[in-house]
Length: 325
Image (tube, rainbow, N blue to C red):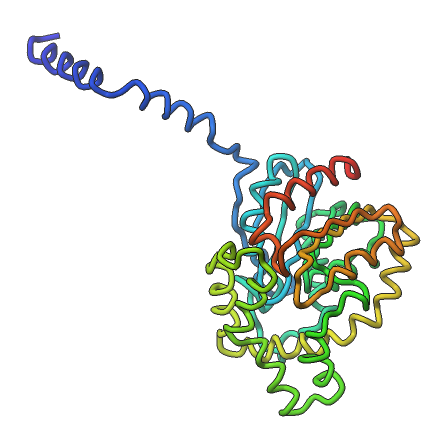
């Protein structure tokens, strides 16, 4: 090594000696704290029945699977805080339905926007992914989609987590009589105008903040992102079709109750008790058909994950640890 090289090496050592030792400790800690690849949330699209279906996925593929089924007007985006809280122990998969989030949004002339068809698409998506045993997390629209899957495949669904996912008449708040019942009975421009109020930014934010202990706990990312998807050209017709088709869900409640009584899937009903859309009586009603159902009422609203994701995640972990192996 020549003199010039020695001087350069000495300068390097002097420079390194000036770096606080804590930097090296922090770097080492960051490496240790980095999530395992299996825990990292990844983002994908799958071709299902000719449509691009977006989904989020995390967790070990060989772990028990939990399928997250979102509500209106959201998408898998609503689970952005829940997925990392569960993915160390469970395989999590969360698709966006057609017409929602990042999935394709064909017109109602190209895709029949019914809850039967949404369930078909999710069913085919899960088949394509090779997922034949799973638990379901159902919220809002996730309930009619999830119960269709469960009644079709009672051997596949291992447990049900209902977070403001309704399956009982007792759970239908006055919201439905105000906005939807007239439209179901007499679909015309007057009743449609009332339903269209649900598509406005005011009503979208209302669903995210009403009943919260602190409305500022709801990230604006949630309702602003949802409103952006609602405002896409043609999306209003998609949502109107689903609003009208929802009338077919309450008549199916009895068959869903029979499924609960016959197959006894473990049930955790964890609800925001201040929900203006689905009343807490809907959570408590699960105990009528499954006396072992666990019911937890939280002091929050419809999109409870925005305010109580950590509490919900902990309850899910405890529930699944007892019921799914």
